[in-house]
Length: 550
Image 1 (tube, rainbow, N blue to C red):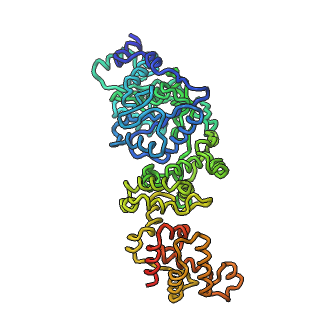
Image 2: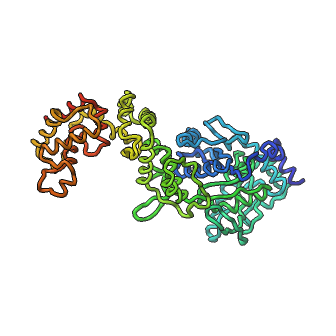
Image 3: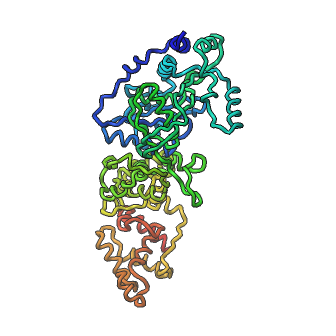
């Protein structure tokens, strides 16, 4: 009896691997095209670090005319969460990062290299496991959980490396006849890879990001097919990345230590190994120290957080590109109107250590991005967000024509307004433009200290209504009238006049216009007051000023 008999007994129905090699040929892509993948497990929410890896992988593929695909690694079915695949697919859609190939819903996929869900590829893995057994490079292991625990305890007591290797690999040296007899006796088994490695030997590896790294060779006989017939991650990813013709594996640097095993698997399977790029994690400041963004402690670790907050997806992507390549920030400054896809992203320029997450910077990018949108875009995006997360705002925005006027204030100028960094800030920034909201709140009219005299405030507002307000004025005339009102009331008509001779005036035109602004909006800071008054209209302007006088 030989290895082939053993392989046929274990996998009697498995196809020859030549069938799959023909079914999934080399891709017909231009020279230098990169094929990358995002390959998460549906075991919880999508982490911002996962989105970061996906963005880098997709950017590199697009830049070279390659392919970015989504593969779902669902072989650990005990840990799978409900709607896990849907969450992954939707996260990519939410950030305008839909894959070229792979899963597009929980059950649908596109592309010719599928199935893109590992649980549906069982036959493929068994074919390659059978091939390894035929070559004498894999074997059935009959050790029970208890025996495995006993080995581990002995290794701990002797203070030696844990694992299934060398003299500890009890089933490695079973003869084919012994293995066949055990299977025929109905003994349970798993399939292990027979590692040709020695721990006292070194391998040299060149990682695209980390550079040259030395490791001890892998000598562990890892499990490749579990008792349920499904593969382990290590084996499945090697078979899949080969058959899906992945050229570059971009993943978290926690996998760096698995490189010796993975390269060994590729070699023993007769595959060309992909290039590896191990990305450093996104870090967070914690009492002066650094730590990884945590799923348990940090709400911003979940990709869903950004959608719930209404942070524009473009801002998140720009921020992540900024973390990925430090040259992006200068490029964006020099090219404020170019699409981020035009940036010449380089994998080998990624930082070897983890970047610190900075929410302030992210929201600043959000402000810039929203400031460049048209009123129509701001309306559509905030309305869509409100329908899901803020019914009060949805109600405010139902009158689209008025909302467009509100969003149009100070938009499209050379220096557009930058008061909104995320959709969850829209309501706070526009509700004073709605009478029902404005009048239902008891306004706290905090007038400037320079004009704290109630009589003066009342007189400014009355005089403005009676003598100076005309809704048909152009902007210059409107401002000239506020200057004239200031002078009539004993205030400086120019700020510089006041600064040059402060004892001569009570205050200046800026303080007078602030009184009118507060009476109209209840706020000291707003976009352009002339435009606000145009949108509010004469009736509202006068009723608000009269209320302030009272």
